[in-house]
Image 1 (tube, rainbow, N blue to C red):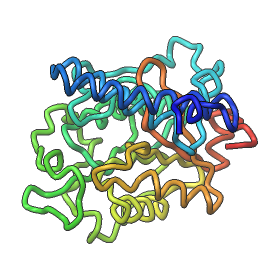
Image 2: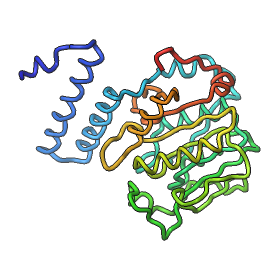
Image 3: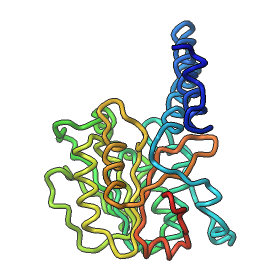
Image 4: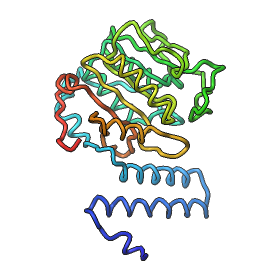
Length: 277
């Protein structure tokens, strides 16, 4: 089949664009292979992630649809910690989205699965109400569950961005074997631990049992389908069961953050989702 035939828009402009990006991905990788450099590999990585963004069946809304006019007061400014992004952590745009969500929802209790260096914990801490409690769960130093993804990142235990506050409760547990109970309901949850299908399903089921009537759950790495990642597959299953999981389209950076809110939470933040979400 000729390239022009493959690029012919068979089901709309979106399909045509996604196929163009798909071919650009392989073109970029080929260029990198011929002249390898750090910049070249970074361009190839971004092109690959962008192709996943275009082809993902998870529905997405724009930043304007997400924010509207909800953060017009100076008191609604979000705070982000410099240096706490990348190298295994979420990117700046994803950090911004989490900070905005916490500002709007105003949770009394937050649970995070996957502490890593504590960067995201820091963002949650500085944007939550001053009396909010944050439970952040991470693997003990000597535990490597079977089937875990990103074993190298899981071995990082420096946690140099973790806030030193009694409001931050670090719990070193294996979420696959712990009972998943807390002494309170949570209004916000961020899942970024084991990205395998069984791992994210286990973490999500335990988080949903803790979620309050006004509650929001966010998952990271919802686009990746390589390296044993099963987040994308599992979230599509949840959507088929009626959970309106969606993404916010990235601005300059691709966002691999997916989220779901209870109906009461949507009403609290004033978010009206499109019918196709």
